[in-house]
Length: 491
Picture 1 (cartoon, rainbow, N blue to C red):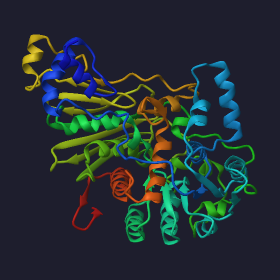
Picture 2: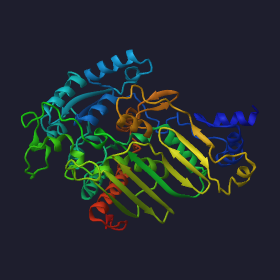
Picture 3: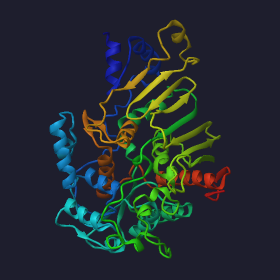
Picture 4: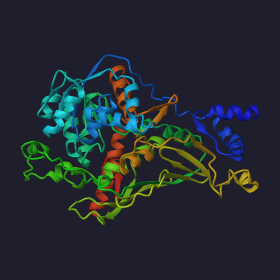
């Protein structure tokens, strides 16, 4: 191997080049574009730290995602530890417990937990340690002098009230997506966060996945040419993937504070389906738009800075899951960015599991992006025309690709596989496998301790929320909607 090739591969860090012809083509074309180097996704552009004063946290909502967030921060339920240890004995490649054990401490203490279901609240207390107190109402937790910052993992309809009150109470916030359930709430949360000067991080952990860091660098260097079309997708085909979660056997009006679950003024009889499967109903969430589309939208916004779309058209329907749900199980969303010269299209089905990679299409190359990233030259590329004609470059062989990563250890469900292929479960940092959610929480904590702006701050969160609400509004009103930048409203 000659010196030029060695320097090229060294500059690519954790990116791997596939094929001898690919190396030659990349050396002459991309080397000129990048100055011979591309960001290694193993680096940490946010520069987050672990050291600092102990931060006292409260967790509001200890359901599926709340439990995952607490575990990512270093505190797993006894049941999860037991199951992970058993799985590791049966499968030597199952390193989940080992990864968690070796994960650097975030130097945090959970001082408060709040969940409306007694079973979950008791589980949270067992998980986070003896120093925590159960609060029966979120307001009590937010106004406690024992709490510095809160993680909010409730259904979407409580995001805005809790974030706003947390800011007013002087608490930093990590909140799960979608930022809000309604358009008006997005404006209210934005104003409250900006006024407070406190740190808000929205829960999009793809901000810390290595393949997306590399993708941004490649696109910034212009390798793809003029980008005109972006396509992202969600495919699931299971009850869990369609939000038909298990209803706990101990769930009843005696163990669940149903009145507090609903917004003030809402008088509705107890309904366990709505409590556990709230994503199926407009009263509590935004369906596919806020639950799944926002993951991909924020990933693309991270890579390209697309911002709020100028117009949106959404269509679809409830074609498979005839279970009383209000939200669609098939969705198409087209976002137009005429001033930037491209279209962003999202499509989803909850009745088919075939994986479709997210793609970014340029005049010279196409990028496939997820847990791995690959760039393929376009057959009609003008930039690569000579090399394509000579056979030195093949449209079916990636010019550059991120290293192949193993599938998730001990895969237990189709939904887990879905998240793994999206790059949401594992990434690598300095050659070590890491949890992107851990890194996302760590960044938030670092900004609280040392100042700075987290990667999914209120500006990025506002872009996500408005895009989601534009899609919901278009779908429900069966019309095209536009973003009025002057009045900052959807019309």
